[in-house]
Amino acid sequence: MARKRRGGAERRTRQVRDRPTEQVGGGTAELVPDPDRPHGWTLTLDGAPQSHVDLDDPSHLDFEYQRRIGHVLDLAAPPGQPLRVMHLGGGALTLARYVAARRPRSTQQVVELDVALTAFVRRELPLPSGARIRVRAGDAREVLGRMPDDWADVVTLDVFRHARVPAHLTSAEFLADARRVMRPGGLWAANLADGSPTGAAGPPTHLRSQVATARSVFAEACVLADPAVLRGRRFGNAVLVASDAELPVEDLTRLTACDPHPGRVEHGVALAGFAAQARPVTDATAVPSPRPPADAFAT
Image: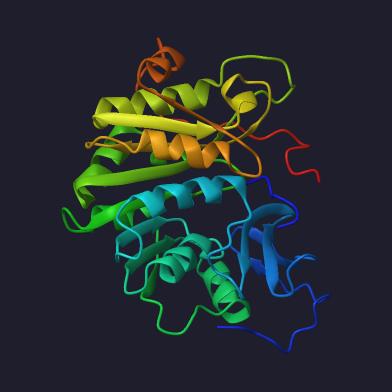
């Protein structure tokens, strides 16, 4: 799930007003044309926005959470240097396209459970020629468990089922396996969703527990989010970043503050205070992320 920023290989013969639709494992998938970009499309599932792709410019990221994960990918190595990236969750393959455009010769593994969704996306929004992107069908945790040690420079998580992160992708055991797959100093970036469904201030308990879980597995962590989400005043996305190496907090802070929807980066003492008294999640205690409110996807 995501909030979309407005204003923001090809299938040139399609009319702009066409809205390709298909029944997939997760519901009704539809591609909605972007009125501001001739070859821009928003992928929705049962009406909930999932991803945005601009076939003319794969380096354009329209959703705020994807922009923030994009910042992490940009800072993972010097500009243009190829990366090994594992994406848990495929959607419209937006972030994989982004890496391929910004860092040619990168090797990428995408894991997507919904085979019909992948087929729909690849047919309607073909991947750029020469992109080294492999899409594996399967459960994110099961495929992760079969990956070799020290393989990835970056592992991203963007998996929602019925607009919720599945419970088995929230535990310390799951994060420990992700850490095993990451090379020393590699980066973990997860798209999470939390906040008040009513607008009344209150602690985002799921996000706090995920911070506590990441801090129990990795040496360093930070969160990129709208301050209203961090205060529990709005339901929305937050990007949790973690590593065993020092994080580029200063650069992430600058880039996040300059986003179309400016965000804040919590780190260090402030992040410890944010997650105070929250307990790490284990496989035995894991639950899905909160169900979004009914108006979460209103435009």
